[in-house]
Amino acid sequence: MRRDTRESFAGTIGKPGRFELFAATRSVKDLKGRFGKPAKKVSIEDMNRAIKLAESLTVDAPGFVPVVAIVEPGWVLSSSYELTRSQVSEAFEALLRTKEIVIDRADHVLKALRVYKSSSADFADCLIERIASSAGCEKVMTFDVVAAKVAGMTLI
Image (cartoon, rainbow, N blue to C red; front, side, top):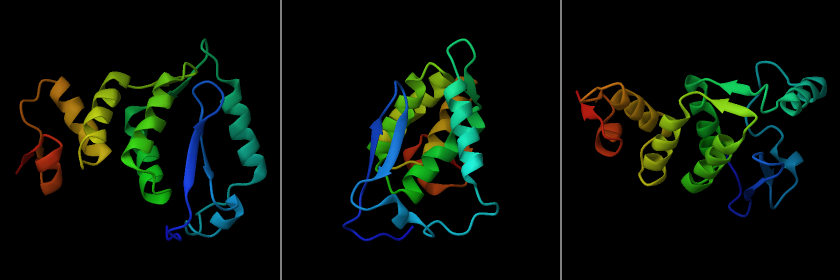
């Protein structure tokens, strides 16, 4: 996303555990066309169904986010919305505190967040390393030089 340096985005925690992102200095309409053309347009009806689904989640019938899917929001928030590591971490922490959503391997996600927040490593690399380490791997091998330097992995 290209943006004017005077633009900024902000996040807030709305309903308990709900993180909302909004354009802070310009209208959200100004975001139109900035993210490329989607393969399928999301209609108002689609959004209304998604909102209805999210609002239907309860502590007794929570939503579930598999560990493989948890990486995507971090990438979108940092690359598309240009949120800082701290802001991305705050969004994940709010999601982890939400009782209506169960995060697969939440303990690993939290540990990976701590490394991500205090380093220059990608969140995905931090999560891979934490999961592999908890599985008993003494070394997590990678071809990624940066991951080897900052995420605790070993360069092949």
